[in-house]
Image (spheres, rainbow, N blue to C red):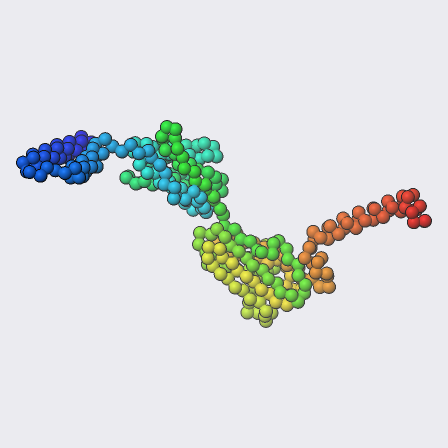
Length: 308
């Protein structure tokens, strides 16, 4: 620090001496220095020396382009970031809003949870909070704070998700014999696209027979698309009774999903679509209808009105 001050003082004296000599040289000429030359010299002197000597008075502030929403995967490291401009001698801290827990102060981690880590490179504007092996419970709001008076903060929301597999038909699918079984499996939130998505078919929950797409059954097709959201579509044409049962979509890097297919014959399409839920409603409606009919038959006003 002393060396820097000495350098600034030396430069200041050199500049003053240079200006003094410049004025002496100008006074010996017939043409005095014009105001423009003096103004440029004054501005240059203030910009190069006086500003360094006095220091900047601008208050620290956050870079508003830093992402405020971060999504991470369970078990995979995630990093929350804030950028601070003109920090000067202030300190940057990370606080968890859920329990108002102080996690980091400057470059030091201030929590016993070893999954959290403060990250900062010297002379960098970036102050990061790294979470190793995050869990669903780590989701929520975090705040990057600057130790001004009063403190100012920059909120970042963290959402930790798990790999999931869903089948578009839901837990059950009812269809008529002879129609096409159309099942679409979607895989989300995986660290990378699944290398394989296998469909299995069987009557028992824990015992599956791998579908043989080269069998004499025919009419079976499978189309898989991989990406941030991977899909696999299974089509079984001309469905018959043997095609009923439990279908399972099993990606290699996400939990499996199942659906039970019911192949019906001779039932009304409306009843087929509603399934068990509609059957329950029909039974309830029939019971209410019977009770109402019995009440009307026993009511004297009903006898008078209809002459019975």
